[in-house]
Amino acid sequence: MRRLSFVSQPRWQSLLRFLVILGPGIITAMADNDAPGITTYSLAGAQYGNKLLWTLLPTAVVLIVMQEIAIRTGTVTRKALSDLIRENFGVKVTFFLMISVLIADLGTTCGEFSGIASAAEIFNVSRYVAVPVVAFVVWWLVVKNAYNRVEKILLIGCGLYVSYILSGMLAKLDWNVLIQATVRPTLEPNGQFIAMVIGIVGTTIAPWQQFYMQSTVVDKGLTAKEYRYSRLDMIIGYVGTIVIAFFIMATCSKMLYPNVQIQNAADAALALRPLAGNYASSLFAFGLFVSGLIAAAILPLSTSFVICEGIGWEHGLNHTFQEAPEFYTLYTGIIVLGAGLVLLPHAPLVGIMFWSQVVCGFILPPIFVLELLIVNRRDLMGDWVNSRTFNIIAWGSAGILMVLNLALVYLTLFPLKS
Image 1: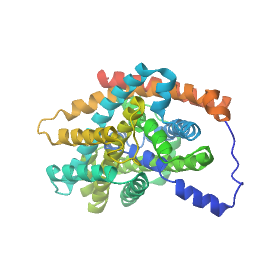
Image 2: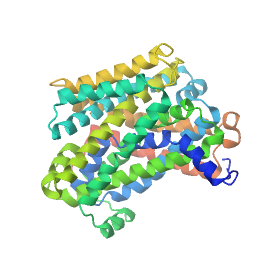
Image 3: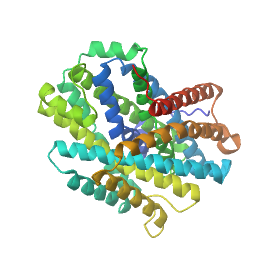
Image 4: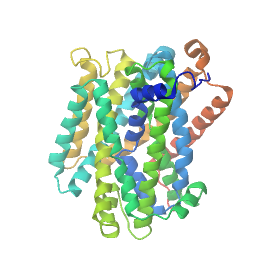
């Protein structure tokens, strides 16, 4: 893998260039802390206390390895992942991935709007008002604005995740205990504990991230010259993502474990009210709302990128609706379906999210393997192929990811008893 020097230009010029490039990495990372993810972290803290905090460090390593490959491949080839998969592995493989990603992302989008509905109702706003309004705002944001403006708005939204840190501060966390739990792995020999470990990894590392990261890098017009800035953008984003997950788990551990039982993140927000005060509860609920809003914008966008790139249709936020009708129609359709299903009185939301998680578990490992095969092709990447050391780390991560995701699928279909 090619090495780059950071001393080729004055520091102030490097900083200015970085600020211009800032965006895709942080947005992708923060959107990863979506409503289903926050629910998983809340449950982990409430049910197992601090025992699962250690899972966040290895998860962060795998995330950064995967996303670095997406950034490097995108900036060097200037092609999106679906394009490269179609060109190198054929239409059949691409079609299978497109259908799988569509199913998985539609189910997850329902989860985002469900989180928005739950958070709104904590603030006494009906879901029948909140969900349509948010759906329209998300649709307008993407369809009516160019990429640079969308990126700036989403970056501002990402800053609102600080509500989880503030909520944790109000809970008066014990830092000595938390640091020890983070660096000392703990395992319990029962099925539910193991399922939660796998669930944390599964909800943190999702297929859509790989496609979206590479697509936005290409859509923004970044090249190999901007690689190091884009990589730094991504690393900052994922460090922030893990910090947010840490505070969610730690807060729920401190205030809810072991006496308060919850079913989702909205329950956690409500349970914090008598224990940590109205401010902590409201900040937690606000974070759930913001996370759902950002992910509800990103997930349909990622899906539209995947399908249009795979088929060869015009795509990207720098095109108008007239120039890329299929792209924007797909985006609109996914938002309408995702929001509409949440508003149906007896919609099988649990079943939809259940099967979307199963699909994610099946398709993430092969997507990562295809990425690794592509990034190691010297005719495509030149001197930017993986080094031997990086390949050992990357293929090792792929193997671990494959085992964990297949285990997640199995435990989702056949839950183990404690």
